[in-house]
Image (cartoon, rainbow, N blue to C red):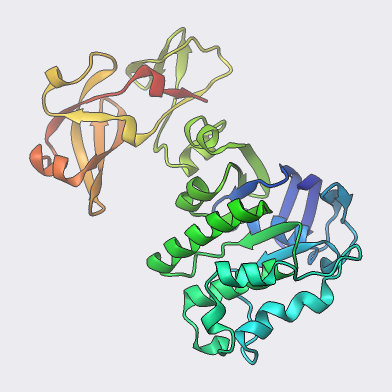
Length: 345
């Protein structure tokens, strides 16, 4: 397990503030956030390569705050692979074995298993200079796991790969985590990776943790407007609450439960908004008429921007639905959304 308590870091132009995170033993945990939010700084603090101002770091209930990186019993995979170009694949994988004798145990007992699982046997004598991006990432992953670490730290390891390699490597990571049961902390900005790999996640913004929880909880029940916007809710409105109703601008919107004055916003995921040119085909709850203001075509789906009274909504619809309804800017439509999908923040 990994436990970070009250971590504070001061760097030139950036700070981490009171970071508290726990990654349970055997858990796959992702740290999400926009560029510059502090994701990699948290990871480098756990690794032990940047100084911290305050706080403690524990790995498997052992405090490692003041230990050098090689004494922390961790494996690391970086975004850029960080392989030695003058060494073969095998020598890259085994390079760290001489430096990672931890608590008297000799690393490398799972070496053959890891090489086989990552399909690296045919590549062992090749130079890493002649490998594809996906192959290099598999070598980097094998090197990190070869030392039998207690925890695995991943710094956006898939972001530099093309889509096919990224999907293959994601599958490999999933399978290895299930088979080895290793504790993983992964920094990423990719929602697909978080949904596919992780049990829990944390959202970091400007050096502070905004929310920690299960993947469904964070993505569907955000606790702050920033988290709601970051996870793609798109429809976030300041609101005044009155029982089971919320007033956003001039619109009165029904919500699923009574809310007190501690809530200040409502948020609705764009995929939860139903669109039709015929009001009769929509449910009665929160059924509102509006005008299409803009269409953003993403190939198989579209963002449909709608002006409704003094409020701007965004809905996501399949491109074939857009064509079938013959929608264009200026066309009148009706939208509807279930009160249960209106989230109060």
